[in-house]
Image (cartoon, rainbow over all chains, first blue to last red; front, side, top):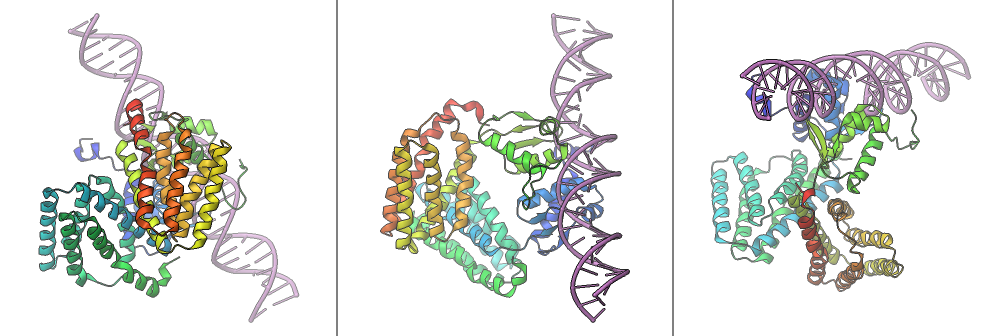
Length: 226
Length: 226
DNA sequence: ATTCGCACACTAGTATGGTAGTTATGCCAA
DNA sequence: TTGGCATAACTACCATACTAGTGTGCGAAT
């Protein structure tokens, strides 16, 4: 009862099951097609079937699980149309964010991006891929904030998540970090010049770099697609 | 208790509760702030609490219900930032759809849009607002299909739904149907000319027409916002 | 009259038992 | 050996009972 941590942050059993399964699906510890049963998962977590059911429903709503009544529940595979759609939405949002950022750009924005680009540069020279990805996200989020569209970062993140799950299937391609940083520099420069045309064009190229990666995954790992 | 369920599409009790509540929330038969209890709703539908709980969870995931553990579950009010974000995402997607449609435009597209515009024209002269709204949706969906981005129509529809729920609070503004049709004509013309710049600019104006309506609702119906 | 405290009526979360529907299995007959 | 059918072994769905946390209102004490 005196557990201070647990009072405000009430984590239900369903939350634990949901978070764990979510992580395992995204990180591909659970591969597409894996069959999950309420009873089995409830035994694994030491809870009853009800919280598991709640967690399944949430994951089902997010299209991560396919719940077939009276049949079985399986981890959903990738759908190329849906992946492409997620990328399309991200592109569309990101471009419009950039346009609006250009309209309200100030030196504050230039300074904020410069700092993030420095962080990315350091991450690359130190070979810290995790820090690189974190600052990559910071870059895009900063533009959203500077465009006065903070919620856009959430939408972008949701789209990115779906694509990232797929890209876990790819082999290491971290050597391209320098290219991505160069893209960011081009976008930042165009924003500083308040050149929406150049900024959006650079963003198109930046976001298009995954095209071939995804194509390759689709070809070589067809078994994970549905 | 065998429902009149579809034979192939098994409609569970949770589905029925979800669909009904969803409709009532969207149509504002259930106003923001209305308290819903699992027990009460389960009595109303003549089912146990479990399917009601499933339905609540789904609606909670969609941000239509706010589920506060051990306290109560209430219909969520409107959040101006979220409404604006939904409109922003719709704008961004719609603009990019138009750009891609321009890139692959053919006479088929021109013909398809012309037919839809005729339907809208007839709906207006007959004063059939429902038919007008239906063909309005058809117009935007047709552009998505012609741009080879059918899923974009779903995203647009989701965004539109959130805004529409808010606009149910507005008084009748149907007199503007002619203006909206004129907007559509301008967009269609620009697409026919494959003029992406003009088409997107027309779309910006078209989608911006709700600005004042929403502002007014926010001012005069502040009690529904959170 | 005001305030404190406790009982009670609520809430959502969890556990468990049972039902209907689907799939896999294995036996029996051809 | 193989095809078809009965049956067992799953599945998710639903109902009921219980737990624990929260707000409210009444009564007693000041």
